[in-house]
Figure 1 (cartoon, rainbow, N blue to C red):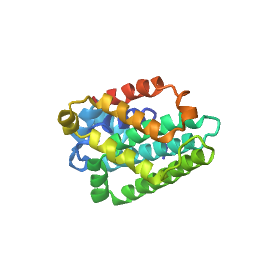
Figure 2 (cartoon, one colour):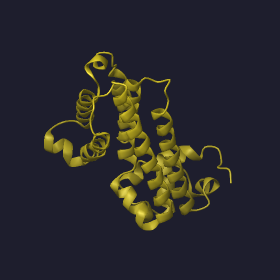
Figure 3 (spheres, one colour):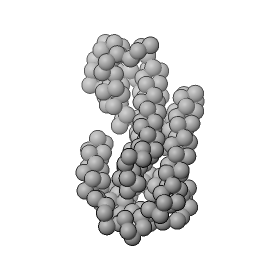
Figure 4 (cartoon, rainbow, N blue to C red):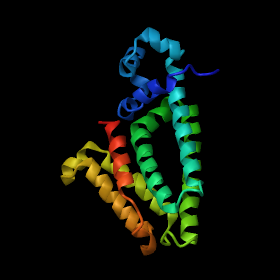
Amino acid sequence: MRKPAGTNKYIAKIKPVIRNTKFSQLKIDDIAKYMDISKVTLYKYFSSKDEIIQQVVEYSISFLQEVDAVEQDDSVSFVERFQKTFLQSLICVIYFSDVFLQDLKEFYPHLFENLAIALINRNQNLQAFFESGMEQGIFNRMNAVLFMVQDDAVLRRMMEPSFSIQYDVTLKQAIIDFYNMKKYQLLTPEYLGSIDDSVVENELAKILQTIS
């Protein structure tokens, strides 16, 4: 069945909420409030609470498919694709939080499985991208899997509220510093001088604004 026009904007409004709040525990009244619409209007777009979480997962899988397209787009330089994949990894950590994934696994296992498959595909494509860059001498030789796992582990720790307090650093600055570390780990000296970091800094500001 075709989704009514405008559905995605309401899905986008609920996604920041269910980063830290279990969707299974939300009532329809709560969801309508977070979407900034009446319950009557909500039912014009979604037939049930289950349909909402289904749309959230479909939205997420579509995002991961867009990520795959970026990684495989040979018309874009490896350096630019590295920047895009870093930002996409951040978005994945933000919206596929431990709270969200655990809730999905427990209460909506079939949806969790669909998302898990999309995440596995994303990781496989990302690994292939890094290994291709290494083959062409643009990226330094290293274990591509560990390089990828590093993103998820470190960015998830940074997203914890205690991180900024414990280390006396803003979230934005911590992520920029981590990006710079990744950049120096990955790029060979020949390509380090040509990278435009302002692209990442500008996009990072937009991403963090959505969860502030």
